[in-house]
Image (cartoon, rainbow, N blue to C red; front, side, top):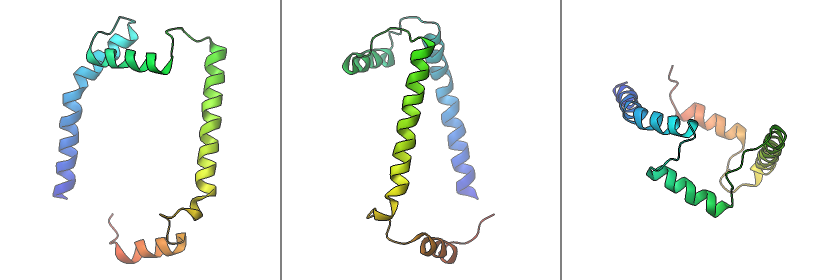
Length: 109
């Protein structure tokens, strides 16, 4: 219980420390100001390397990109599920794995 409370406290401290810088960054992004901070410079380099232009999308382009990305992700998840049994990291069947978990780990509520 002590480790759990310590991890929750550390998480809250971490969130409190990054809240203001992240909020300022998000405010700059949404106000369309030129972001001259380090993150803005990194973002500019990444956009140039990827060939992304600073043009806005129409709603049709956005909808097409959204459908295309989701279709690709559905296909990737299907492939993961389809070939999960052939993965070398999966050495036990699901029934054996569940049995192993139930017999070797205490039930924590």
